[in-house]
Each structure stands twice: as structure tokens, then as C-alpha cells.
Image 1: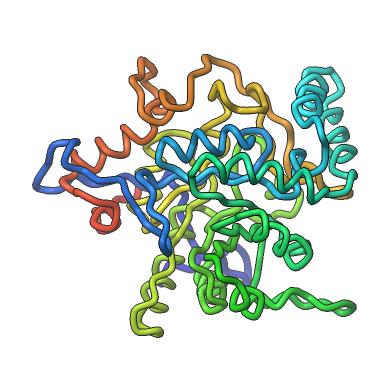
Image 2: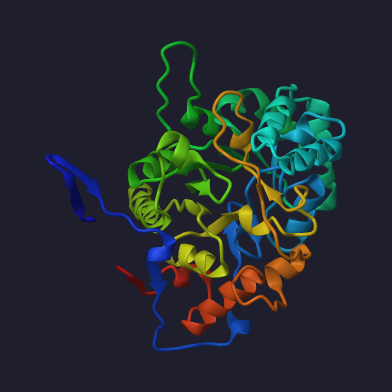
Length: 375
């Protein structure tokens, strides 16, 4: 049980820790990096690195999703993004980049709102998914809880193999006065594909999502330089504690079900390769990266990053943030070689080295590594 801190008379808050607050402790042994495996598997799908892309048009096109898959990760298309709404998404993206370079700081978000006012077209969505499917890599797409029932049949018909059900904040128990809310447990039970649902930020929500039958739970709200959820809603989650809490829920759910393992996907607050290592060390099975991939040559956003929440019609919760610096091809960004000493290139080579330096040979073992708290 974490400490409760008194923040005023009769009001307490739970102490929580971010990834910056923890560090990995070396063990009594080391091993060669070539003896370390970064592979993981969810349902019948195996991946060579624990990478899922954040489902934003800024970093994932059908072509980028294919390339991520070829490199051993899972690229996730946004089924409600520009590739599903516009016949020339590259032109739409160029307009967003040009708007982001204007002096009007709101111009790019206004344009994203306008572009996302166009309806989702099944033919365009099917074509985007077909590009990924025909490459032979695993096909994944993200849909919001609000449009899951409407779009999922078309996604499955197009060939989606893993469904990402993701909102900024999601629950298994949505209460609505008017209308019929999504019954997540019934929805997942009716599908023949694994569902990864999130984001969650605490033990209870993670446990509830596991009990719906989700194969994976996304922990975190995609915190990055671009996201503004904390500023807009006052809602945030220190990632080290959130991942550890979800891992505790996974352990208890494993006992509750007699062996059903639900994967934890960490999403947010990972600016450097060391943060990826810490996220796995806290209990994650894989990480969902967005901001870290912005400077990939293959990224459609051309150095700009935003999340799907930027296009909300009345309350956007993401800016269009530009990153300066060198660009790299995606393979170099993930596996090096690197001359950058700050942990922003060779992201998974660094994870492999961290595991080797602490003596662990696979991801599940590395979840048991010692941790210290800075403060």
C-alpha cells in the first residue's frame, strides 16, 4: 500500500512515482547482449520487439505500419484518422504541417478538427488496411469506444487481426443517462480477435478491463510534449506507479482466473530509451511509442507530433508539437547505430543492453529487476 500524504485538513492524496523518479538496480550478474531476447507474444501473434505504435496519423501511415511490422513491432493505424476520411491523406497532412508552421498557434488544431469533420469512408479504410494486410505483417487498427460498434465489423472484414480500443481515458463501466453505452465485456466476447483496451491509470480500472476479456490493457494516457490532458482535464498518471499497479492487477487476475495472463502496454512519458527499460522493469510487457518516433524519416507528420485527441471537435487535448533535430530512418531509430548520447536513437538496442547489464535474458525476467526511488 502506497503512502497517503496529507495535502490539507481532512484531505489526502496517494503518493505516486513517474519514470523519472525510479532507476534500475544492477544485479550480481551481467550477460552478453546477443543472449537477450526482446520477443513477446499476445494471443497467437509474436513480435520480436515490445513496440506498439501510438495510433496517430503523425507517425503511422499504412506504409509505416508495414515497416514497423517488418522490423518486429506492431504498427497501429487510426481507423478514425485521415487515411479513413480523405482520398489524399498526404495532401491533408501537408496542410497540417504548413498550418503548424504559422504564427497562429491554434491553426493546426483547427485544421485537424475540420479535416476530421469529414465522415469515415469504409472504402478508404479498407484500402489502407489492405496495404498492411498484403505485406504479410500483423494488421492492427485503433477505434474509439464511441465508434467501436459501428466500425469494428468493417475493420474485421478488411482483415484487422488485433483491435486497439483506445480513448484518452476508458472504463469498463461507462454510465450514460441517454442512449446505450458500449458494454465492453459483451463487445469483446463477440469478437474472434484479441482486443487491447485502454488507457487506464490505476489498479481498479486495469482489473475491470481485464475482467472484460481484453487480451491487453493500455496503461497511461499517452503523455508527451504534445498532450494537454493534464492542463485541460486536470487528469494525469505518474507512469511508474500506474504500470506497477496494473501489473499487480495482472497478477491478481492471473490467480483469480487460474492462469489467464493479460498484457500491460505502457503508453506515455517515454522520452528516452532508459524510460522504455524502466517501463518494462515496472511490469509492462510492451511499450506504445509515439513521440519517440516523430523524427523517423517514414513518419507522415514530417517532424510534428499530435494524438487523436487533437481533433476533438469541442475540447482538444493535444497540441501539434514540432520536434527539431536530426531525422533517421526507422530502423536506425529502433536499432542504431547511434552517435546520439541521449537515448533517443537505438531505442531497442538500448533496452537489450540494459537487460544484459543487469543479467536478464527476456522481458518477463526483467520485470523482476530491482528498482530504487530517487526521492
